[in-house]
Length: 162
Image 1 (cartoon, rainbow, N blue to C red):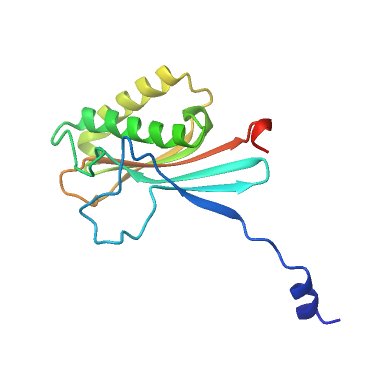
Image 2: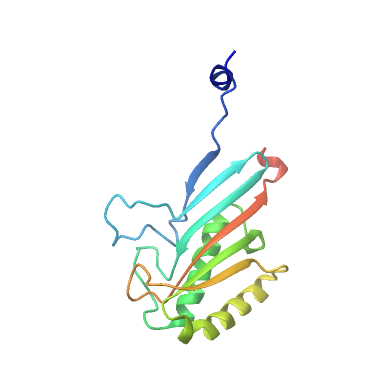
C-alpha cells in the first residue's frame, strides 16, 4: 500500500470549530461591507480542551456603533466589558485568557492610562498569573477608536459537557 493510499484510509477528522458572538452586547460592525469577512471570535474544540480566539474588540455597542468617542479610559472599559461578554457566552472568564494583543492608536500618549485601566481590571478579576500580552501602536479600523484588544482563552470543558 502506498503512503497516499494509507492516508486516504486514515482520514483525519477536522478540528471542530464555530463562530462565537454575544448579540446582547456586541453585534457585527455595521460599517463593514456585507457580508463581513470575520467572526467576533472562533471556538475550537479539541476533545476536552476549548480554545477561544477573540477578534480585535473595541468600544462598540450592540448596534455596531462606536461609543465613548474621545474618552480613552471609557473605551478601554467598554472593550474589556465586550470581551467579558464574549467569554461568558462560551462559559469562559478572564481567568481563562492566556494571551492578549492590545492595539492603541497612539501608544506614546495612551499607554500609561491603558496600563492603569488594564491593571485595575485584572486586579478586579483576580487574575494570577496575568495573561501574556503585547502592546502595539496601530491604525485602527475606525478613526474614532483609540484601543482594540484581541485575546486567546483556553479552558477544559466541564465534565457535564462531554
